[in-house]
Length: 347
Image 1 (cartoon, one colour):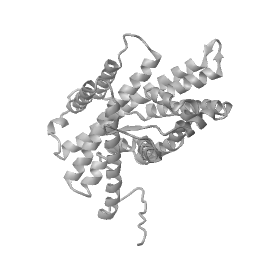
Image 2 (cartoon, helix red, strand yellow):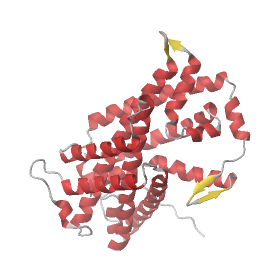
Image 3 (cartoon, one colour):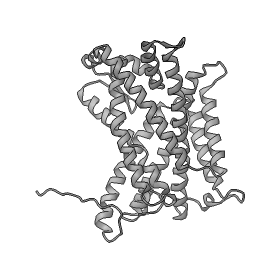
Image 4 (cartoon, one colour):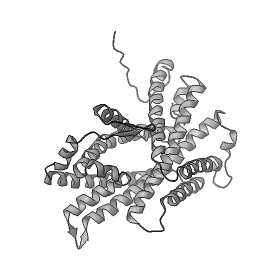
């Protein structure tokens, strides 16, 4: 369905407005958590390369959220050229990191990886409870965490009306290629570089610390530590990519909430446009206030909000899968650019 709203649009055409509104609520929660966690993570990486006493992550995160709200009100949107440039630079950065980490692992005969594999399973904290680590918790929570790596497809579907023909399909393809290659590879390489307790210690800036350790192992170039240079490179790349994720949260929630307001699920005041730039300033600054208030309420500790994002996003994925299958059976006559069969086994 070539309409903004993503999962909401699919469910409103196959179920009831009440069911679709539940999915939309999960979508809004997911965007709030995405914006806050991405902005905070970007500022943690920035703090790594600018360890100044006056640098406060909470203040910097609030400033980043407000800054993107202003930019979106001025009419900034996701540019295909800029997005392509960031994507290519990010792929190049991760490729360099992976190659250097592989060299480090081979030179050390995989000793760190073996030590991590024979170590006890770590305990898992979830839903205000600590679960004793075992094979079941590792598989279940590891799978849930891995599924978060496909985050992005729901954002593309929120503003599909503004995309050219075939762009949505390409965004899904590019996302799956990147997730399939880099996510498991980087996870494996982190176990080749750090013991488990150090991975937990550096969870906010793990990629930068991986680059620093393996770069320091390589030595120096022109009197400069390769580890320091690689850490800088990774931190700048992470800051740019995570800042782009903040912009994506604004663009995605703008498309979703406009659709909800058009369907009279949300107040019509959200559709008001400023006469200067024609953007929905009330909607954008309302989202900024909601995200900022959550960040202040949590005092900058976004780990709990990461759990909210996990539940919201996985719930949204389940709704999207169910809605897509219902759409095939309830609206079979709708024209489709891509057709996929559904196999139902006998018995």
